[in-house]
Image (cartoon, rainbow, N blue to C red; front, side, top):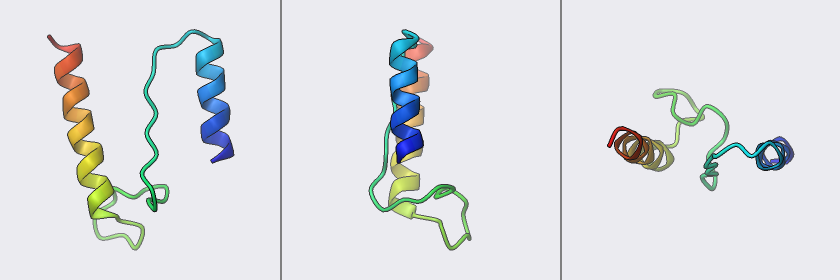
Length: 59
């Protein structure tokens, strides 16, 4: 999480518009279906948000 926080600070300082979401209990690579790290709930939420972002930026 330290890298996550550091990146957030760096993006803010650089004036980069961004959104960062951490899904509780979801490790890195949580979207890799069939992997022991796969977390269905976080995967579904992340894809839903990705679709929303695409809609926002293409309107």
